[in-house]
Image 1: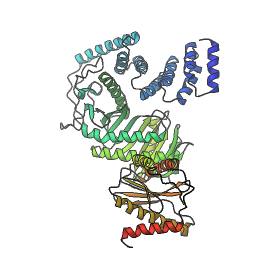
Image 2: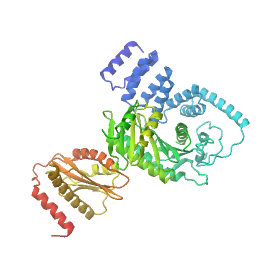
Image 3: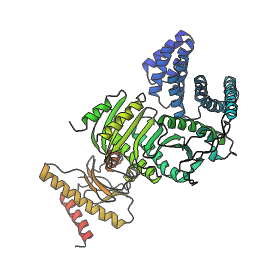
Image 4: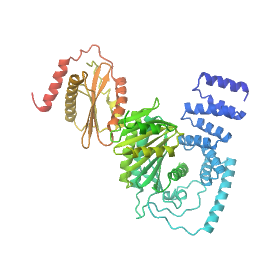
Amino acid sequence: MAADDIHAMSETLAADPSSLVFLPLAEALLARGDLVRAARVAQRGATRHPQRVEAHDLVARIALAAGDEARAESAWASVLGIDPEFGTAHRGLGLVRYRQGRLEEAAEHLGYALHQDPHDAPVRAALDAVRGVLAQRAAAEAAAAPVAEPASGPSAPRASAALPAEPDALGDSPARLFDPVLDDTKLVALLLDDDGLVAAGEYVTAEGQDVGAELGAHLVGVSDEADRAMRHFKLGRWTRLVIETEAATIALAPDGTETVLVAAPHEVPLGFVRRTLDRCVAVARRWLAAAR
Amino acid sequence: MSQFAPLIAAITRHRGVTACVVVSADDGIVVDGTAHVGVKLNAFAALTASLLRKTTRASEAAGFGAVTFLELEATEGKVLASGRGGLLVVAVAEPRVNVGLLRVELRRAVEAL
Amino acid sequence: MIRHSISVGWADAPLKHFVDDARVELAVLMHPSGQVVAQHGFQNRLDVQTACALSAAINATADQLGMMIDGAPFRGLHYAGQARQLHLAQVPLADGMLVLLSVFDEESSLGIVQLYLDELRAALAAAAPPVDAAAPPALAEDFERELNSNLAALFGRK
């Protein structure tokens, strides 16, 4: 784009700071390699238009170009908070996770991005590479480790299966949806619809009692309460609610009209619970997308 | 200056904290607090207290016991709360706040209630 | 004194909104004389009239008490019972005052009611029908007579 065009867009933005011209202007600056100015324009625009996914996506892409992966991650998380199905965000996060070596999460995001655009060659190549490494690791671990007994306590998770290559088909048991994420931990995860009914996951106590429905019914009201609070707080949309109780830690995340819930015994580190919640949300999104 | 002023000052010293309020847990009424311009203390007090009451009822019904700490994370900020003895301490913060440190400070403040 | 044209139902939507947001069980908006403007949650008409008559009397008493003690009418009353609480508040309009009675249980709280009361006041001020300049003003003695007549009907005296 010619320098004159950039100048003209700058003038337009200066005259009307709320104009959406910040989007093409920041793109043009990014294309020219002027990352500092591009970041400034994009960030101001995203602040003025917090509900525009394109703005946050642009902030993320500029940050990634500048090598600021943390900033890119945060911006793409904002994108997914507004539009959980925004393919570019999954693509970007998949590639970031791949570079960070967080391969299970990379596989989830890249799988989703590929589902959205099956012709995205770089994503397919990255996903193939990630799956290859994960398959090698799984084979090595299976050969070295003894068979694990199911954990006791608040959850009774099944033995870990191979990571799902594509979003789970509807034919697979929804109760097992989160098994690959939960693995042998003592955490439980549920996907609740807006009536508090369990759509996926299960919570079976050590005594064999399925208490998922009851837990879901009690906690979906909390999700509604958070929605009400946000209308007054002017802090955007809520993305996560973490509740520490005397016996457990519970984490909730909205996902469209659904809510993902993770519960853990008190001794599980808080950061691990939050991370598990994020991964369960990603799994739930893929599963729901496949169901539509 | 109320008895809660030192506790509130300790929390608002943290970078990124935009408000801190001590709230009556049952009523959701502000006991004492401070906030940046534009932050509505009454709304945060009433609605956070309501959220905590609802969460506590759900947690106790589900067999998890009383709630000791709550963090509500949003795209443009966070609300953290903890309580004891009919009072809550609520902190409102920007996304960049160090949640780990603030959580420790809040728990310390609640012990002093 | 309020001089409004009769415009039935103008306060229904704002009151319903308040009831939903604040999660109160019962709410009734009334003239200071006890005449109902809008209500939500009551099971029968007599309960509404009873609540209005008593609330109007309490409001009138609180006004006088405030004048005696503080030189200005008391505004707002909160009563916390065992399972329920009530809140009585004034709603100023352009040309007078209405009274709102809210009854709530553990689903709500005083703070929540006060929070949404501000929104209700703004919504009612915006929704209030225009003042009917042709209507005769309600005189103080009319108000006293209407209130006394409501209370007499309530307590069975003629």
